[in-house]
Image: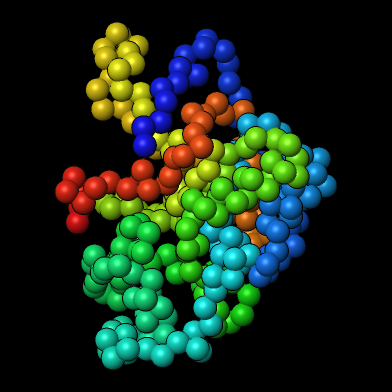
Length: 265
């Protein structure tokens, strides 16, 4: 799906972008109306949802609301999971869960598993997350369909507030040849994940040939500055003032580079 061209960056106006942390959400549990919790929390802190806001929501709270949680005590490890876990001092039930969530294993070594998830995302441990999940033996899986999850939250926010917003589901990923992790988009609704600037001209009149900006990933990383990994009570950020290309059909899978064009795997 090709997103429409936009010239919003070249209007000649100054732009101020705000990143607002949504505080004091209750601990999200199975069946919760996540959109309603977000709207209520934003209202209570006097930053009510506005038209064209972008909401970045961590995948863990989405998975908790959708009951996409696994208790490792209920997992029966395969022989391979047991062997791998024993060799690298890992939890065999956790390894088995990672394998079940994977379409394939891309890299394996030094106790680390880089896999391709069922969604086609390549990441460590198939996105299985032990952080910010209530229960010592519980882990959060990625949402079954992150784009659908984002769409559901967006529709509910529109119903509750009358505001048309964009929603991005985020996850923390490492990067090839770069230290540290950043937040990236694994689900989108109402926003094109890539801003295609090919054909525009640079400062000196040269036509851009390969300029495609992964704005959904950039917005997720910006949101992480206020969300943070350690603070479970701030799993959502509102980004306000950024003019983005809109779409009713775009999917986060547009961000995945085709395997035949990937230089790292």
